[in-house]
Image (tube, rainbow, N blue to C red; front, top):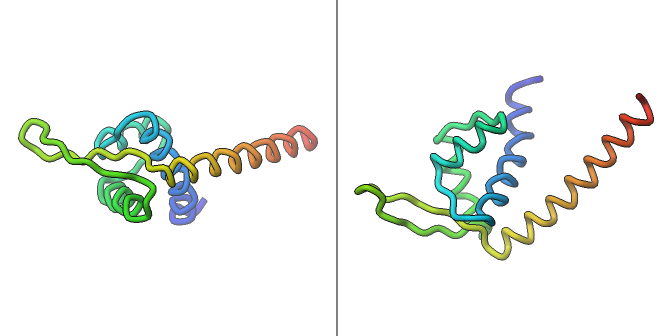
Length: 108
């Protein structure tokens, strides 16, 4: 599949993944990159940090800064709006998953 199309499609999955983890506990960029890699998403800091910033500007994430070993680390947590979006995304993903599985079973 065309890499540009695949990347655009999976960016939505990445955002859902970020919201999911930011709901559980505060997340930061380097940790999120490693977490996403464990699930097969190869994302660079040049892609992730603008995405986190945009999600914060959209009101999906809140940000706090902490000094960690002399460096400022930005931690992100999900907002109420982010939780609502995450729940809606989960419902729609589950509905799509069931539809895809049903088609596979009826065609298989």
